[in-house]
Length: 325
Ligand code: UT7
Image 1 (cartoon, helix red, strand yellow):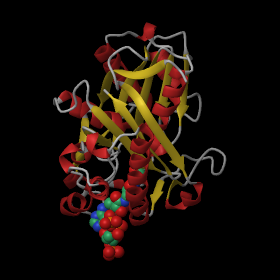
Image 2: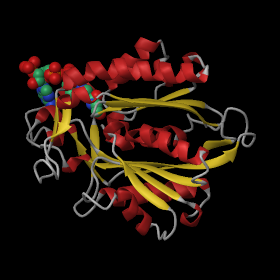
Image 3: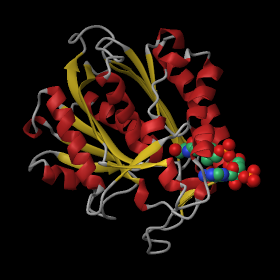
Image 4: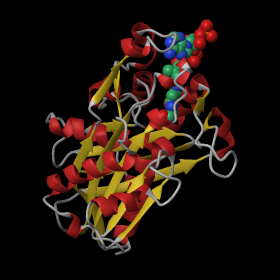
């Protein structure tokens, strides 16, 4: 077993300036603030401006995380961007961020696991750090879902927002930085049979178009509650930890009712579940680090806390990661 462990040395995030409220959306499609809040908990979402791309959001979040870590781009040897809304089909958004940060060394690539991308990214970066392949990595979840929404489909366009969040993940000796610090366990899963419940109906090979997001929301909802609860339980069991020992749950922010359903199923105190659904909506791969940042900035998440990250998304993909902060 590796003597290295992966610690969070910095956290950052970025949200585009423009905010779209539910009332503004109700002018575009047949919906209401009342319906959206009651069924999802969402009050508003941030939307990227014209000429503002996923890489721009990612770069801002990366710079904030670097500042929080007290590191510069020179210290970073790996960039992983979790995104489903890349600037271009290729090159990867990670390489565009690499250039924007002025880096001419190291490696950069994207991870595509839709809303679970950040949890997949934690697993990939943790493995690479423990294998000695990187010392300081930037893991970024960045999305401009506003660009793949069908703005005439009220069943989907009300649910998503744009944003980016980032962690600096660093190698530490197993005796450094205190007991229990760093990634303790992670668990990722997928099941390709459910593709038709949540997908984008375009792509370079099949249609030569970008396509729009399509979702059978209520069916996805049921899978999400069951699979997220299972992932959290497995991740905790693998670490030999009882879920009651966890200080904070930082979930993917798809729907307040999913957050509540998972907490109820696991018998978790709802006050321990960080929620940014109301102000960010669902920012896909960005939602977990953005929620982490919000709770760190308002003083809830503190160094030494035991944190469970989790997510569920298209594929289906899902997973969880237990981290000592
Ligand atoms: O991040 C990836 C994972 N994504 C998710 O986890 C999303 C999971 N799904 C959900 O969050 C929920 O299923 C939704 C928020 C998408 C929908 O909530 P729901 O309680 O499952 O509603 P529903 O789809 O069963 O629709 C109920 C009614 C329907 O009308 P009828 O057929 O009962 O007359 C819909 O047409 O609500 C209607 N409806 C709306 N009404 C006003 C659907 N969207 C809207 C809307 N405004 N925006």
